[in-house]
Image 1 (cartoon, rainbow, N blue to C red):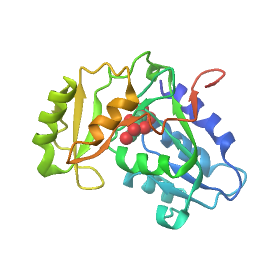
Image 2 (cartoon, rainbow, N blue to C red; image 1 turned 90 degrees about the horizontal axis):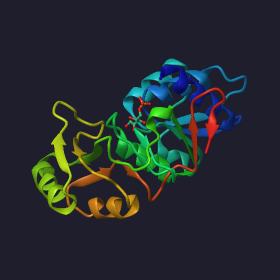
Image 3 (cartoon, rainbow, N blue to C red; image 1 turned 120 degrees about the vertical axis):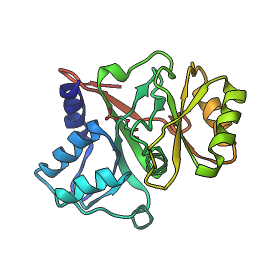
Image 4 (cartoon, helix red, strand yellow; image 1 turned 90 degrees about the vertical axis):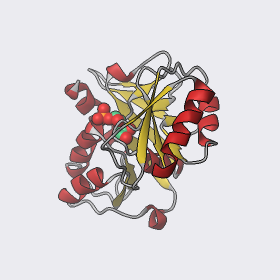
Length: 215
Ligand code: 5RP
């Protein structure tokens, strides 16, 4: 699938314009996009990064990394996803960067999501839904999620997010109403961010292939 990821990332470069400040996601698909940014025939102004991992790669290429607080509204955000349904609703957070990704998506006018075909699903939830939690609330949030959704939360042991928090991966969900589930889970005290991108979903999804499919 790495070739499909590369093809999706390459297509997303067509959305980049000279001197833009671009929001940049996290993951192996975005890694191809960052490599592509470095090869563009024109400069971008800067990138706002969603993770330490992407920041390191951007800096390695000599691309300036800007704080979101200094960037204002972004024209473009490019990021991958773990699952995508037929309405461009997403599950994200497999790389534990969901909170910063969600903030940047919200701050952006256009969210272009780049995926390989294996990420396309009719109903979200086969990929366990990541939820970032404040460490002291982990057990409380897990009990609440079980009670409210019937899903099985599993602590992603050994993972600390860039924000110093922990991740619960919720198994056995069939997410037929992503907006409602996102709202419900966001109400649990101790939840920092839910890896459902439905209220602010992707504007464009690029599925890597020959040729890439733009949805
Ligand atoms: C990180 C993410 C990634 O976008 C998601 O996990 C997809 O990763 P990859 O491009 O490596 O398949 O949400 O938090």
